[in-house]
Length: 493
Image (tube, rainbow, N blue to C red; front, side, top):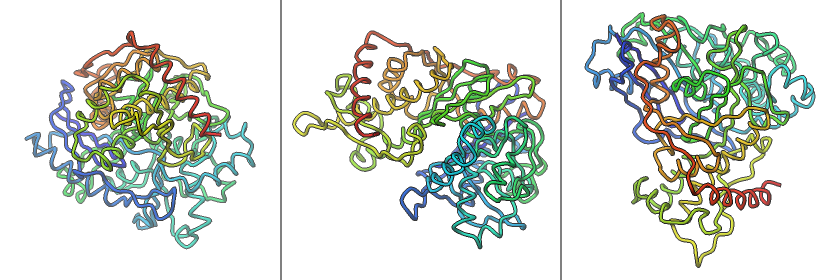
């Protein structure tokens, strides 16, 4: 028996198949082979065509099945992980009306801030745990104000994972954790946030049916099964945003535990059993996947919009002829602190840690006579870590602390330099696991299916690759971080 997980990111669609009994990864595939593009008609916008997500999911799924050399009928459960905060709109025929407004689109910032102020910051925080900010609800209001003819066609709104579920099952639905990431969930009342919808003059009918995060959410239609290469009637058993799902994939489910991601964006995600919030909404609190009314679990998320994005930007624009390991080798030849060069990695839209301001990316103290390629590359990696630490301090100010962070052995965490900078700057142990979001979604599908009776069973076969600890260079990274903070204060005011 096998389980399959889909992880729909803004860069690609990934599919993984695991053997349920052992948790062993049987095969995985992703599509497209090059990064999926974003469309930006104006500065600060970011859109994608949802049909491309589905197309690439189908390609990756068929490739994974062929590679696994298994019978499609032996795949008994499906899980979905997806890029958070996006907005997909469909009409009564369940057809997409316009391109999806995705997570890093910043067009709705002013709309969300206006709602935050007029509804009352304390009221929003107590009920939403966040400012409406630049999240899904505010993006929908932007369509209402700026594209009224399209808005009038909207029957249901969906998050990216809800769209994949629609394509699979033919039904429009969502989850509480999904609505919470769009500031559409009232934590106090444990239901959709009607007060925010009323403020925005949005009818509650646009919210699709709310289904449990774990459990049967529908079955593959004949058409979907044919396109994916799976068996018709296979149940969809789990759905969650990529950040909480990434945490779930590494068994980060208990208060005090924390996960990290350093893919396109940089993420820290801390679990708490209290509905904690930052009064400035610089970090955000959402429903975690294992939340229960009588056993609360919330995830506090720090996000910086560019981590691997900065690294790939440098490679694609200046070092196309070098591989990422070669770039890492160049950076490793430079002393800690990059000889005074600091990089602020904020070049991918508005940043929540700066209250939805776009301060832009900066290379500070660049000296043409001293600094070479290695300095730039090292300062970029250090800058990403320092930006994560800047947010980590906000999380700690909420009374949430940890000494261990878990991450997948992927993306920026493949770099020994990045791992060393991370451990010494945040002063934590870093545990790396051989897993990813698609595998996590597959394991979670086993929970939703009832094959695994509890979460402990779901992590059979999960392998920890290594533990990385702070070392004798800790003081040098702390000095470099202090210099970086000086540059940040100069450019963020």
